[in-house]
Image (cartoon, rainbow, N blue to C red):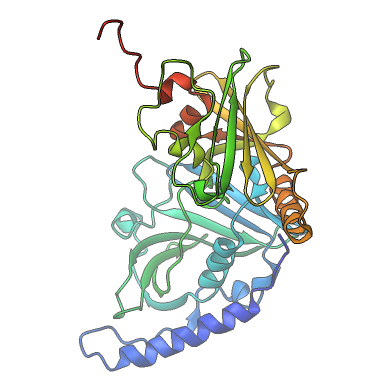
Length: 353
């Protein structure tokens, strides 16, 4: 992910705030915005492009996001990619906070405004600190209670307490900081619906395997190949959820693959698409959790040049994002990738019935 500048976005945001001020000024039952001219974080306002680290602490714990060359990554997840749009939004929105009114400086009243330091499980305040690449703070504050329509429709107000200050402030603006690392990371592993899947083969650690497939891309349902004699599928669409396992596939946790001692014989699934590539998913159980490793390869049977070139790009993207990582799978996905063929077959009829 390329490091991008925020100054253009900051300008857009400033214009939007000005427009909101004009719109709200005509509303007699709302608070006037004329006081909101002083930036809450003057250093940040002048240096949005210099932010290299975001630190967040709340009642659940603490985490941080760091820019490293071309990437923004979650420090507590070994630098795994976070969503740039969320980083951009947080930095720009904080840079646009404007002070409206000074509030209490009594620590006994912090809790009411949710600007209490998150030192207990009940605390609702969230400490955010933005630093440059030299470690100097550009902004630091406890972000407190939000009123999304305090200044009328589209005019949010947030209570804040800047670091090393007792005074609290009502500020114009709002920011989304998430509650945990997963709220920031790019959690989608792959996104290929069942309509893109041609066939899927599931191989179990003991060597048993089965395959589902479609004879034509327009077919509605997957069929189960080589059904045992005397057996049949439960329903015509029984295998469709297995075929669609890659649709918006998300992870619950992530770590470097070399941190796990991977079994010699995991579950292995091969998903071949109509677009000319195959995704390999290896699944292993660690304690009560199922983790997966992903890789992609070109389908050698593809001869169409344009189709093959497109598949090459997709394979590079998948491998570039997933290589060296292992993902904690959701319960639903791990079940589908480890179920045996019996899951899709109707119970055999008893003799004489």
